[in-house]
Length: 161
Image 1 (tube, rainbow, N blue to C red):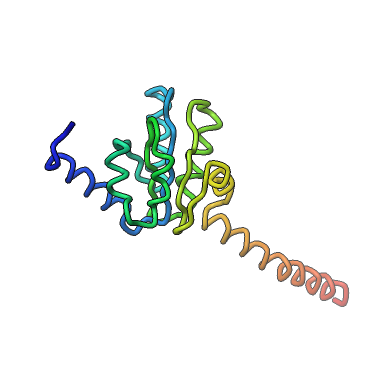
Image 2 (image 1 turned 30 degrees about the vertical axis):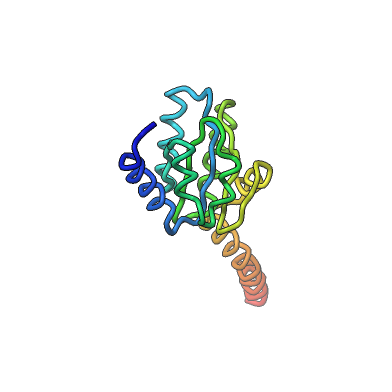
């Protein structure tokens, strides 16, 4: 067992990563190959997600008394943390996408914007598109009626000309 002096910087690192986080997802990575893990880490990095493996006891100490405290009940076995400070759905979305290819990978649970979700809930969160995708779909739906109206007006003008 490590001395308290050795544990303190690790617990502080976890706390620093969790500070200001919009979401934290617990990932079960047991059975994932090195190649698969490398691909997962690359895709998470590209999405702006911090992905780290810590001892469960260290994570328990770090999340105690925070909005992420509900995750403590799921800290069993090999567990990695996927943390995002920008896009709340990114960790769940990226890990779920990778889990389709890597059968050994799975989501355990997570906290998204202060709300705890179990495995089923976090898998539903994983289906939500990114903020940018939602905004582009919204703008497309706003633009569509205007574009159609402009086409009709143009056709009427051409017929009268």
